[in-house]
Amino acid sequence: MRKAAVGTAVVCAATACAVSVLIVRRRMRNSCRWARAEAILKELEEKCATPIGKLRQVADAMTMEMHAGLASEGGSKLKMLITYVDNLPTGDEKGLFYALDLGGTNFRVIRVQLGGKELGVIKQEAEEVSIPPHLMIGSSNELFDFIAAEVARFISSESEEFQLPTGRQRELGFTFSFPVRQTSLSSGTLIKWTKGFSIDETVGEDVVSELTKAIDRQGLDLRVAALVNDTVGTLAGGRFYDKDVVAAVILGTGTNAAYVERVHAIPKWHGLFPNSGEMVINMEWGNFRSSHLPLTDYDDSLDAESLNPGEQIFEKLVSGMYLGEILRRVLLKLAEEAFLFGDTVPPKLRIPFILRTPHMSSMHEDTSSDLHVVASKFKDVLGITGTALKTRKMVVDLCNIISSRAARLSAAGIAGILKKQGREFTLERQRTVIALDGGLFEHYTLFRKSLESTLAEILGNEVAPFVVVIHANDGSGLGAALIAASNSQYSELEVS
Ligand code: GLC
Image (cartoon, rainbow, N blue to C red; front, side):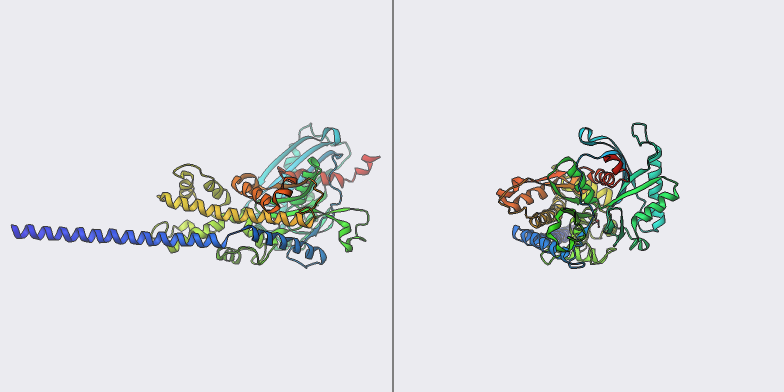
């Protein structure tokens, strides 16, 4: 009996010992894993750092590239496209005009009744339609037919409050938010697709005639009176309400900027545009690239695996299409190398673009003490449950690193434009307004705050109070309609 008791005691002691060895091992393993996770986070933080000195270098590089892009065709990664918009809205525009805004995952159709100086925008209506993903990589006809059919539906539902004088053709401003080489205010050829669109047969084609053919196939009597980029539309829409608007920036699915350039500053334009003092330039800044950009391995692999490798590098660091995807890539590394979500990698984490920027912003802006928004996004989007609070805190830190880099770089880009316009250091201070739009700017509050405070930081106390950032909500549609109004086939009748 005694022997048996001793034996049992020995077995128990051995088991207890083994269990505690296991616990110690697991603890050690966990602490090793956590240390690895923290090292990955720290490395990301260092590589994404954007101290003010670096931002000034980025701003200077942007200014230099703007000069180079204007000086010669292909002289820079910045295309600096002439838009033929040399008259921005004055407020005198009158009549019923339409706009079609295509540039991301959704497109919008707008009608607006303009009442001139006294009445302004009398009435405006819009409808938004999402583009089925297969049409983004399908055929040109399919895409344009889908759009034209929606335009036809929109027009057929018009109420009597909108009045088109009898005998007049409807006129539309087409906001096409891709790089286009314009040949006039109402024609231009597509240089390349961006933001996940890829339809080879449209590249090199006149996008207005593609749309016009589709409109004709619908049997619609509608003239495309203007072709504008969304940045240009936003600039025009912004100027309609505020005469001090001199540039516009889109921060949405993609990113880009347009600004007002002085024609006399560009010798080669003197013959081309003899009568105009100003010309709006579509920079296509999404394609900006500089050795000063803080790029990481995550950015390199995202670019290499994208539909347009080597292109739109600034856009891939900054815009809404990519921020969530950068975060996914960091989380995947944490899962693979630090086993942050258990011994196996959660399968959904391997799916590109599954984590969208709106998911990221709601996790980043989760102010609850238990970070339950982070937990629920992880569960709903990635199928990951049971994350520890410290893991969720790390996720918030990651969102902050990735979005701050994007917001601060955008601010540096804006500072670069102001410098090109000579508004950064002028002694004679003038109010300068930048019109911003796009889902990233509109809905990601921490992003927007970071952009605004960084711009003030770069400009300094003396200049910053003169620079105002406004949200030109859906200004690009209104802007396109206004530009169509200024290019209306009836405008001369209006004057006389
Ligand atoms: C992409 C397009 C550009 C557009 C921007 C914002 O960068 O190339 O034309 O303005 O997205 O929508």
